[in-house]
Image (tube, rainbow, N blue to C red; front, top):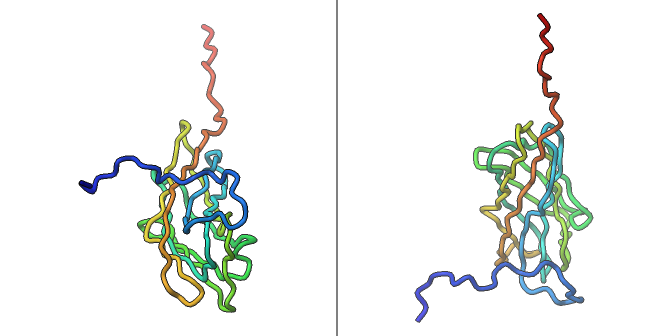
Length: 171
């Protein structure tokens, strides 16, 4: 029988591949992997793959280790008619997107928000886990839509630091 444990399976989804129109099955929110230099400003895109129209979304994105500071959020081509807002709290950045005018995120896949962060300086290259939690997708009449979430990561590259040379001490 099934003991309820995960046997590995294939819940990783595919990477886009060659699905032709109408090939989407279900809905998934995912954080696109990114690379940034420490001490810079960088964008993280959250994408949605959806086989039905989505009228609103909400989720929390958190960074671990906490070396990213939220600056701003912007809509993308897919959410051009949406009001998108965000606020940083203890658990991460809570994002909310909806339309006052009944616009939807049409079936398809691709980024729905661009989150802009300030990236702290790092002494050594580091990987920041970007995880999604508390996510809600709703259809155009506000009914919840089941979906998967796929976390991502940002590679933070240590900037070029001026390393002081050994002083030339001559006696």
